[in-house]
Structures are given as structure tokens and as C-alpha cells.
Image 1 (cartoon, rainbow, N blue to C red):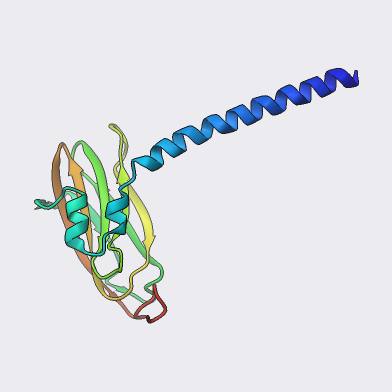
Image 2: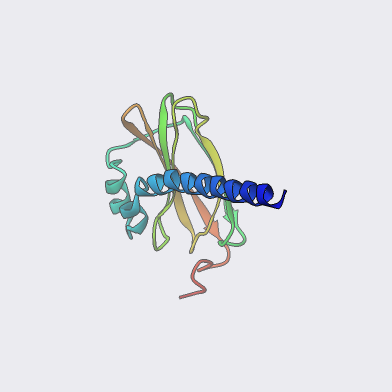
Length: 156
């Protein structure tokens, strides 16, 4: 009886380990696709270059909900949604942060292109949203005034 139990536990452990390793493969594959250069960029122009969004048009079909004044720049709620058909990517850029690209999401066809995030803002800054849809780029922006200056870096 003990031998069967031991065999079962060994087999179960092998299956669990194999399943865990199989889960790691897709994660590492996704990590290779992230826009490392965009997230490391230190200027808005470089971010737009890495996103291939240099020539983008203003759009009223992008919902960007941000507070006019943020009491604490370390937690600024942002809601973003795109009503542009075939939205493939949405990126959030904070002009006055050390690394302006704050978030970037890729959507598969049929996915609801919207999300909410909490951003950190160093100081008062425009927040830009760049949307890629059907191979074209669109943008929207709003300024957020930050009451607590240098919330991200402790005043450095």
C-alpha cells in the first residue's frame, strides 16, 4: 500500500513540475515582445519614435478620464478606453516623468480596448494616450495638476 502511495506522489509531483515549466514558456515569450526601448526612453519624442507614432491625429473617440488636480502625485487614477474600431494598442505617456512611457497594452481582436491604472506623476504634466488602430495612430491628452511636487522621486 505504501509503495503505491509513494508512486502516486512521485507521478503527481512530476506532472505538477511539468505543468509549472509549461506555464513559464509563454511568460518568457511575452516578455520578449515588450517595448523595452520605449520604457527606457527619457523623452516624449523618443517614446513616440519607439511606438512608431510620430504622426498621430487627434481623436474624440479616445476616452481619457483623469482628475484635474491630484492631491498626491504618487497615486493618480486614470481611466482610458478607445472607441476606435480595430484598436490594437494603447500607450500612456506622462510628459514630465523621468521615463515618460507609463503603460502600454496590446489588444487582440475582439477585446474591449479599455483599462484603468494608477500612475505616478513627478509634477504637473500632460498625460497623453496613443492608440494604434488599423495601422494608424491617434492621440488624446489632458493635463493633471499635482499638488504634491516630486511625488515619484522624493524631491530629487
